[in-house]
Image (cartoon, rainbow, N blue to C red):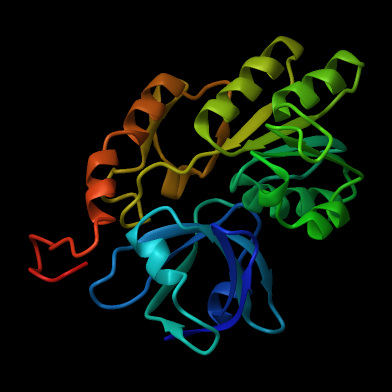
Length: 281
């Protein structure tokens, strides 16, 4: 069992939890993820490692209440425990030799962008961090983000924080002003990551994206997380989750991400009966 040692509500839909998982914390690196299961009948859900503390033996996860399992996870409190907490999984991010970087995060992708920016900043790189939210009330981790970069830009769709627009607009302004980057990292909804890649391609700036497709086992066996990169089939759980965004087949990836929306909606229905177990899920 993996106890919840801290729970923190970041906004109305997003929650941070610190989990006691010493073996995972010992090996965790930025860019990697875990797969958790609440109980014996629960589904396996992947979440990016938002932070870790090797001395305390803890791992931080941040999740959005978007389905049955994450809504159930949010009902747990400090002192409760998860049945499974497997990791670290996936390849860690490679930040060696980067001197100037822009890290772009959209929505909940900000929680994944944070450890990437933090790692680059701690390695001595100059980091511009650009994050976007629908409105000011959804902004999360502002203090942590400020400490993880040299320059923080927060955009909101409605301009409620005084900076209206999308993250791509802020990045375009920096590129057009002559800002030169060794690396751009984009994390968030697929349309946003694709837009960032389209923007950086003419400038020849290496752009890494963090892919989070449908994932089941996390070992490359099921094939559910397959994506096409540079014309080759890759598995996000073992080959990623970081990939060269200029090589990703975005049309295929976005089509696959929409495949199970009807099933996801059904799972959220109150009292839905699972045909496999016969139980109420």
